Image (cartoon, rainbow, N blue to C red; front, side, top):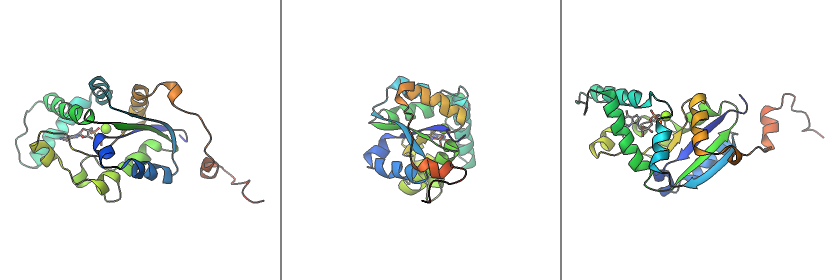
Length: 198
Ligand code: GDP
Ligand code: MG
């Protein structure tokens, strides 16, 4: 559990907004360890594989979209969850290939949950203040949907340990994930805290 890994991607809007440093800083300061990092423009194939590592994702995100429209008393574009999911994926693909992204693997105790907490809820309109999505964007499903584009929420973070394992394999080769000792880990995880006093 102390060595749990998660995938974090700074999406093209995060790079264009010059937020790379601030986003990395928020994960460093909580005590997580950066074990892999790359800067690239993802291909359509990579983006589609990334969002479909969970074969149920298209249906789930499509159903969530339908529920969102219904909650606002607006007719959804389609009654079929998979159709709506494909529409979300089409917009996401266009968004994610529009410029460079920073892909990273962060390691540490409960890293999946901790990074999700730092990143905040999916829709910036409702993301908590203090989170990346809550602090840096004003976007919403209503506005992005009306413009037929993906919601610009700055970052991606794995949603579960299982998802993280699959996503990390997709973005990084095993040799690109580094094993090294970070001095602060001794304080974060050491049982007795011995070796501090001289
Ligand atoms: P995340 O893990 O918080 O990024 O959220 P999901 O895994 O559920 O969805 C992945 C991405 O799909 C999000 O970052 C959004 O860009 C988009 N998305 C998710 N849910 C919705 C939705 O209900 N409506 C719209 N328009 N886009 C969505
Ligand atoms: Mg997700």
